[in-house]
Length: 38
Image 1: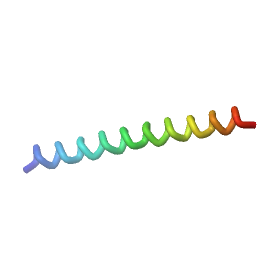
Image 2: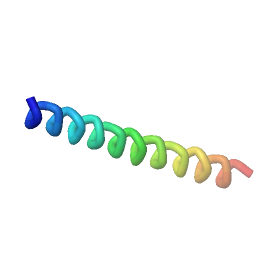
Image 3: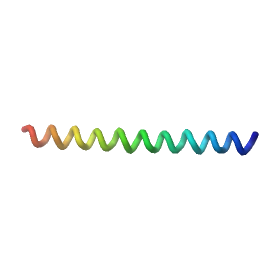
Image 4: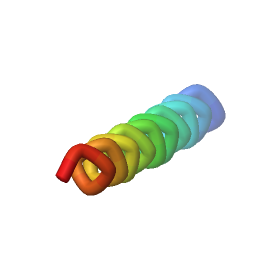
């Protein structure tokens, strides 16, 4: 049970990190495109 909980916590942590970096990449792309449009 402890191993399963640790695995789930690690998994959700990886998902949060992945989503965070993904959102950051999109944010940078939007800023870059906005900057080139002006």
